[in-house]
Amino acid sequence: MSVRQSLLAILDQGPCYGYQLRAEFDRRTGSTWPLNVGQIYNTLDRLERDGLVAKGEVDEQGHVYWEITDAGSAEVAAWLGSPVERSGGTRDELAIKLAVAATLPGVDVTEVIQTQRRASLSQLQSLQRAKYAGADPNGPEELAWALVIDSMIFAAEAEVRWLDHTEQRLALHPQHAMTLELSTERPKRGRPALRQAQGSDAAAQGSDVAAQGSASDASDVERARRDETPSHSGAAR
Image (tube, rainbow, N blue to C red):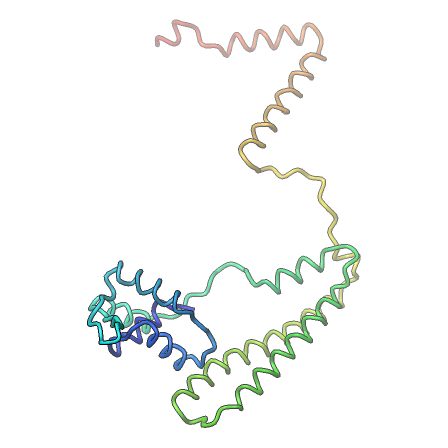
C-alpha cells in the first residue's frame, strides 16, 4: 500500500492541509486503511524533502496547505502508469506456517488448517456483510469502498480454496513421511567466526593424522614442506 503516492495523487487535485488529506484518503478507500495524522505529516515531511510538495498558504485557523510540485505531479503520473510490483520471494505468513507445521513431528497439521479455515470463513462472511451495508452503491464514495472490499473478498475466497487444496494434498501423504527431524549434518557455510573455528578443527585433525604416521612419512612431509618454500634466489627472480 503506497501511502506516499496516494497522498500525492490527492494533492494533485488541489492543496490540502494534514487533517483534510486524511479525510480525503478515507473517502477514497472506504476507511479500509486507517491512517493517523502523525503518518500523514511524516509522509509530507519526506515528500517536501524530496521536492515533491511544498508548504503553501496558511488560513485563519492556522492550517498549513500543502501544494504539489511539478516533480510531484510527474511522480503521480508515473505511479498511475506503472503496474504494482509484487515481491519475488515467498513471505506469506500463513503459507510458511503450514509448511513448517507439516514437517513437525507430533503436530496435527489438519487441525491447524481447520482452525485457520474457520477464521478465514468468518472474515469472509464479515466482508460480505460489510459490502452490502452501504446506503448508495452507485455513489462515488460507496463505489471506492466496494472496490477495496471486493479485493479483500476475492483474497479471502482464494485463501479458503487454497486451504482446501492444501488439506487434500497433505491427505495423500502419511504424516510420518512429511516430518523432518533435526539434521545432524553441519552446514557448510556459517558466520565468519564459525568458519574460522571449523578451519582450526580441520587443521588440528590434520596434525593428529600426521602425528600418527610413521617416521618415514614424517620425513616425506618435511621434505615436501622444504620443497614448497621458495628459495631466496627464487624469490629474487
